[in-house]
Image 1 (cartoon, rainbow, N blue to C red):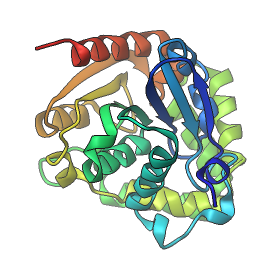
Image 2: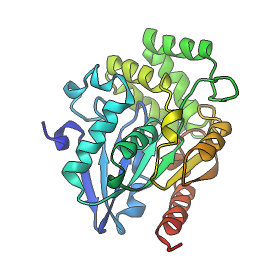
Image 3: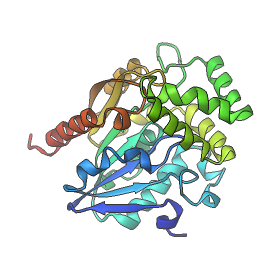
Image 4: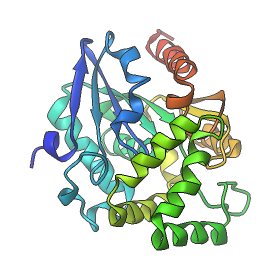
Amino acid sequence: MSVQYRNNLHIGGTGDATMVFAHGLGCDQTMWRFLAPAYQDRFRTILYDLTGSGASDRSAYDRTRHASLHGHADDLLEILEACSAGPVVFVGHSVSAMIGLLAANKAPERFAAQVMVGPSPCYINDGDYVGGFNREDMEAMLGLMEADFPSWSQRMAPILMGGLRPELTKELLASFMRNDQGIARHFGRATFLSDHRADLLHTTVPSLILQCSDDLIVPREVGDYMLRHLPNSSLRVIDDEGHCPHVSASSATSRAIDAFLHRTSSPA
């Protein structure tokens, strides 16, 4: 099966370098419609849907391969092998930030830089580590997701998008409800129970960590932790509410990315 069909690839842009965009849980590549156009004059752009999400081939979703984020990282490397001759700038939102990190650890030569929008290596509090959820709350959230996916979606959409943007919240909720609920539950458990803190230390790719100032899913402590443990990284906090600054604050997000890319490409 071609990755073009499997992951609903859309390739555009006119630049020599390549920028790849990957969406978060419950979403699809349309989440990049405010941000990706800002780079189409400078980059060849690749947008895709994670396997099992959006308009991807859902029959390609493998509950063994995709039981961990490593399966999605392997999907990404197959996309890069098929579609990009040189190293790429990878822009991943939420869970896709970790998917990109795992792929970059496996094949660092494929990545020139990575932009991590709302990333979290672990969502569950653990000793001194603040992930945002205790174990009981996480199990309750996953239990609701498994028992009543529409109710879970209605609760999560305003939290993820921020309560001041009802039109964007409505759009996100519609995106959630377009998902195959069985796949979404499986992917949700793989996402929220993952722990990739140890993988941060192995990254050699220059990284930008982007966070909203008021994010109920990924608290500020997570960004500070990543900055301490992710080599060659920088942290930028966007003054915004929610978990999706590339949608709700796209101009501020693009300015932060531009500044990072300028530093990354400038001689030392």
